[in-house]
Length: 414
Image (cartoon, rainbow, N blue to C red; front, side):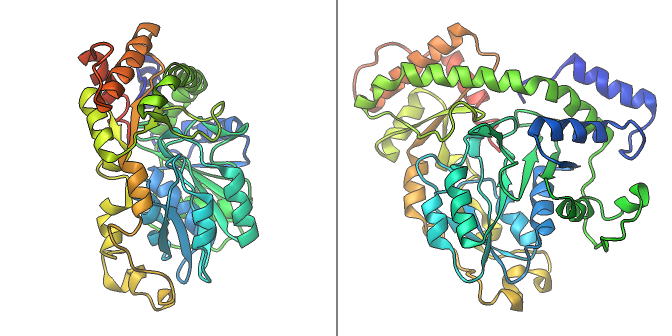
């Protein structure tokens, strides 16, 4: 969470005083946010959900993906990306990321098989995927594209907002995201027919409140409605997002420019696909090897991409053990329709991704960082780089700012 305060308190208090906590009523906060967020994104339809996982699941089911289908997911993302595929009854196939730590378009192309029907590019840590390349592969290969923008709220790619480029998109608004309601999410799409299905996933009884639609036969789902507290808080948060993201972009531009000379010491800047439009939640660097990344972290507490504890495929217990549902008859890995899908995984099956991730360090940016804090962070990066290279430090790392980098990096990472 970047910022929440009196405005959010006032908005939530107004909901309580109005006595309308359920989302379906005239002038509701959830409906108002959906309309406003659709305009912000430049897309036709938005449906709020209880979480980003729910949003991903709704998008996957709404697009018609299910048993008999494979969906490509990146080796580095929160496990919800793969779990949404399983929730639809399909099988996730895990593919490599490249040095941007987002899904590698060439790996997507190489991984397409006879059962592959979709791909979920993830804008990880606020960094935009190479959507031009991904969309080119997807269109040539006949793949549906679900953008996982759960960590990319407010970001874009080449002038288009993340989540609006593929066939559908999903967002998260949980505590760790740069726009938050504590928990929550949204599924977005331009196609009304797809959104009707998505809304049925989010709330299978929504037609009781909004009226039945003759062109949609409702189907059962668990449901994942948002409430008016979430809508109220998000309406306040939406007013801040553009300024916050621009402040982080400005900080990242400055850090990258002022640390460029450290490449000769082994600190290489991570490739960025759309620097003027991404969220810039982190400034990421590649070290020569995993040991150097650990040495860097010892001097400047920060996250190593491959060691956040839950964002790399080798930590996805339910996927690696093929426990795709609570009951074996509901487990996609055991379904007859999925027999021809690729269903085998191992913790070391993607060594290229593990190598990249274990030598990528991530320094958190924050919209409230002052110039003095940015100056100190640049100094800390140089000191940590010199130490990792076995050289004497140019200056001392200030522990308070090192902790600050962790606070706005590791804690937000989910």
